[in-house]
Image 1 (cartoon, helix red, strand yellow):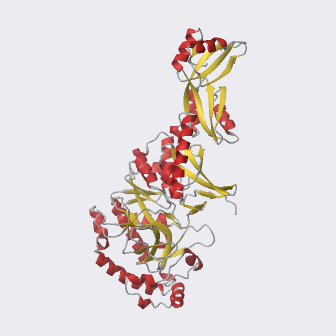
Image 2: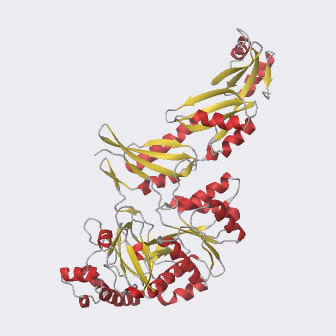
Image 3: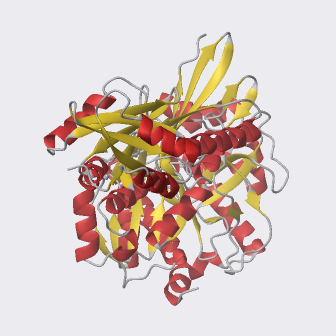
Length: 138
Length: 436
């Protein structure tokens, strides 16, 4: 299981700049970013190799920051690379509530980030299908 | 009740109701005679056909004219002064936001008397000469600073006149000098606590025993929250520049209403529309007459503060009447879609929610020819768990409670932690941008 960093923000221009500047100055690389919007406010979710450091940096800037548990599955970056995982989840009858992906090495490795009600089972199903479940993103 | 409080207040605080009535009647007679020496009241009495000698008992107060803030403004700079200017040793002004301020003058006797009320107030809360007192509000024309300062010195406390602001230094002084009693605005006390928590520090570690909170309205929930954060007992204090400053009414250790110093102030509670006395225990506007002031006596001053008398005698044994915490200002009242709303009602709801910080803003706008109320609240930093569902649930619950409180739908906006303004003086919470 892995920690995705989520940040509460009011919905107004400049919020992403503020966050990317804070993380950039701290030397933290953003691998993937996702924005959930509720109109007046939103939650920005960030995937990084250094979630603890990112949380500390943002929290020190007085932002409301939390970790969300996610499963990170290592995939081959090629057409159809996702199918192995989705088939495994389908046959185990596992539902996912949110997902996104990002490329770690173009044409070679990608990571698929999954949220669901039963993360342990999702990770187990991925492992059973011969996929690598990541505990770190270095 | 501690021995010191008993000693310094003994002369007045345990008078029987008859003794008190006798004292007030004599003091009122004297006050009216003194007031007649000012250009303002001599003209006013003449205009109303009042002879100062007609006022013989406290019941006669009803024959006297009311005095309003506007009367004080029109009397600026010194039309209400009753003594030779050489006998004045200090003045203060109220924080007038528009136009001329209100100026209040004090003889040496007046300053002494004010310090006595203030020291009695502090002693009543349990402070003694062994306490170290940090005064965390501004000094200067604002009466809160010097008022508490003189009262604390009179009591014999070790006084640190820190003044307002500079939070890091405030915390350092409290720690290094083992401060046990503080005076601050509630919003500033909240700000200091939040700052400490942010830095991983526990406000309880300061060891503060007693807090005097005042100079701005705040709710019981806010007091409980501050008591919980610091582990101190927070005492409500009531005062206003026109009545010297702080030390008009104060809570005793039972914290159930504020004893108004009836040897210093004659209190009436009236309906703000009809100006007739309300029934005992009903909410109305507090009207005060100074009983022990020489340089500038004020008669039937309309404070605009809404309160009620708490019936029954207090377990502390003092005979002076108790007032409830101020419920609002008769002129802070907002009329929204024809409904009377006090900002304090909104605050009360907000303070119920642990997931919110203490600050908020009420914004009024017009949409489709209808008044709209938006309440901006601050998410508490540590409560966020990354879940959108939890935030939506919080908001829906707050919205439901606000609607229940005011009777119409209120928009709720969620702001980031620490993003709403904290005022170190009177917190400005209402932004009215309505058309027309």
